Image (cartoon, rainbow, N blue to C red; front, side, top):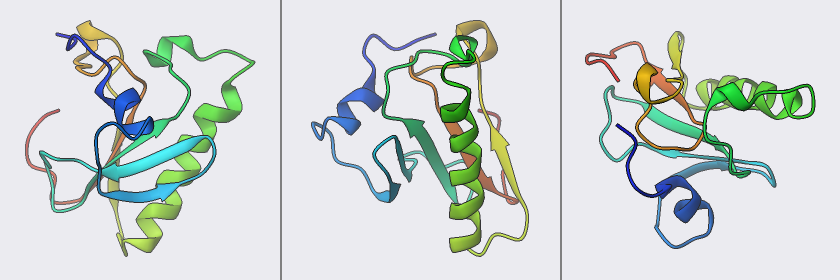
Length: 112
């Protein structure tokens, strides 16, 4: 079930603090406040996109950038292997109505 507000947009706006690990003009990454693994980082576009169903030819580069950022962060975190996870839409288990990619270390234990 989607939460009522886009908490990630509030993080981007600086209204809610986060443990930032990466930032560019288009992407923000921060540690999850309820981690499912030793390393659990959320990577989001700063643009307000609700689900990955909104990928188009016009924003394809932005979606690709999420995965390149995940790779860069994994290298900085010295992760030999890791899991990338994206829930799509409420029926797909997405809770926050903002596109986001989970980067989890291999000790991932519980479903998202």
